[in-house]
Image (cartoon, rainbow, N blue to C red; front, side, top):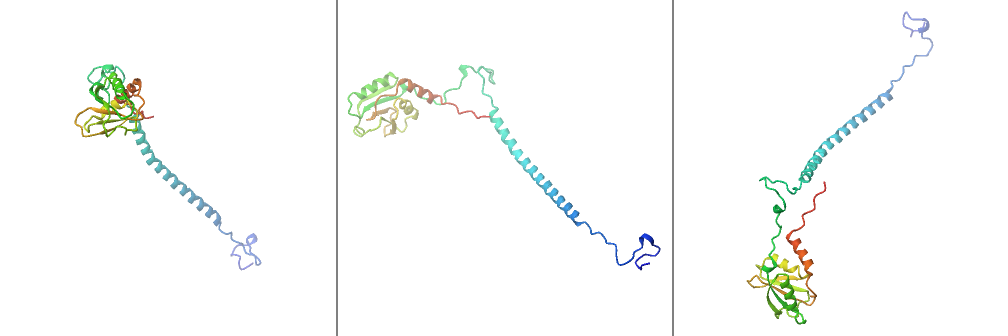
Length: 224
């Protein structure tokens, strides 16, 4: 019996010769693989959590923006004939007043002056403006400061205190006319006809322009 054989053991358990039983090496590869998989799983969980947090914050902003847009778009336009808080109907008689208060042509006194070589131009233009309701003051040749010195269609000259709306009402009748002020204290306006003048704006077009001035188009509604 070999000295390597434990006492009391023999037969098939007997160890003989120089051969020894080999011990199996620990399987480290499996542990490494499991460790790598565990690390990847942990990273995946961390990434998922970060994405969820970002989504929560973005979701709050989106809800706020959506709520604000809904408030802007949810305001209904008043219906024709609907009753107001006082119980009165809002029909045509209760419609909104013009956004801009414009003077009537009869409230505007216009002096018509001719700064061109064409004879009779001031009188012809003055007669046409009178037909359109304006009050006509002086008619004749332009002062020396403007005579033969107005290349444009015309110039409107008034006092610094002249209502700008009066310039607008008269200006729609002469496209391209500019306006300036002088030292006068009266409310009348000089219309000085220049070399580029051909004719007044057709009355129908002037009336449409006045209507737009008195009732500006409402701003475009937001798309919901």
